[in-house]
Amino acid sequence: MTIVHLKHGKPETERAEDDAKTRQIVEATLAEIQARGDAAVRELSAKFDGYTPEAFRLTPQQIDDLIALLTPRELDDIKFAQEQVRTFAQAQRDSMTDIEVETMPGVILGHKNIPVQSVGCYVPGGKFPMVASAHMSVATASVAGVPRIIACTPPFDGKPNPGVIAAMHLGGAHEIYVLGGIQAVGAMALGTETIEPVHMLVGPGNAFVAEAKRQLFGRVGIDLFAGPTETMVIADETVDAELCATDLLGQAEHGYNSPAVLLTNSEKLARETMAEIDRLLEILPTRDTAATSWADYGEVIVCDTYDEMLAVADDIASEHVQVMTDRDDWFLEHMTCYGALFLGARTNVSNGDKVIGTNHTLPTKKAGRYTGGLWVGKFLKTHSYQKILTDEAATLIGEYGSRLCMLEGFVGHAEQCNVRVRRYGGVNVPYGEAAPYRDREL
Image 1 (cartoon, rainbow, N blue to C red):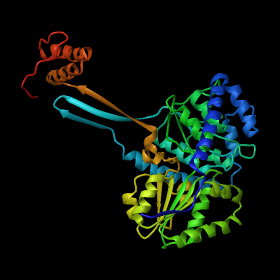
Image 2 (image 1 turned 30 degrees about the vertical axis):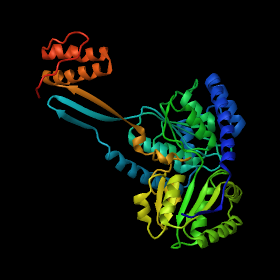
Image 3 (image 1 turned 180 degrees about the horizontal axis):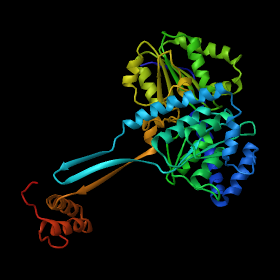
Image 4 (image 1 turned 180 degrees about the vertical axis):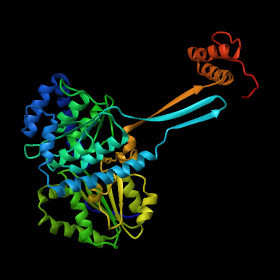
């Protein structure tokens, strides 16, 4: 096996140091929000966003005024994208059914899918106004039937961004706040004097937002760890350097710490792609961000075989994986650890980010090893129930339960079963003993 790294990113030790600094800042900031509520939130908004409105929550009139600033074309584009997301989310929701089954005569088991009762959706927007993130969280929660959806987004250039606010409103948000960063996530989860806490947080964000969600997990639910964008391009010589370089830089421009990895079995393609990246960085308007990300977090890995490429890809477990090879469906069949796959040269990650309909809130930092991305099912809790309809079933299940409880030493548990064996079966089980075995069936 020969795997060659033509380009490395930052060493893991340096990345870990960055993560440690982020953890400390987030922990202190959340403690401030917990202790001081709205006052802390206002100070943080002034410090990081230079934004101190009379109220962070937008009124219906403010929302209407902001939407009116959009052109008809912009509004129609937002509605088109949102419809694609809703259509796919509804198809996913329709695949999730409540069930009820009689597992034996008189014994009924089932489960119900119940929406989370309140959700806080974070929509990034300080560096770029992430209109599409509102579809992915707010609209998907709406399809799931969440009865209270609140949405937070930071100001863009010192004021609410009309496109983001329109997407939140059209998606079904019940409360919209112009509030960003740790202060937004903390306020939604912990609550303040003016913001009622939610049961669950969803949405992507920068390293500080992702760390805040991690620290708040347990107090509230979260969708997943969705930190700085990651992308991987798996390519062979069926495509050229322009496509590979464009797809890598298209995600690297998200932020200074967005990993972008080329994985290929062609050293020729690898070297041509690195050269093409250098060329494109000369003309890309967002080159300052993209160049820093590529320099510090970009990688180029050359393998001998497709099996090696598969193994490396599953180990990295990237958020976005663009596959452009002569066997795209082979990767679909065999890959197990990733956020989302983009198969073939005709599609790309930006399609998924903005319009095609699959959700773009996806696992990062290797979380694709144990979870998929945000989808309508994340907003639903599957709760089981049971009932017994006959005395015969109550007695038989109770007898088995009694003996199994005593096997584990749980006498109180056993008595829960025994009292029903006595009442519904007429069997005189001595207190604190296991029910006798009787050779019978329902």
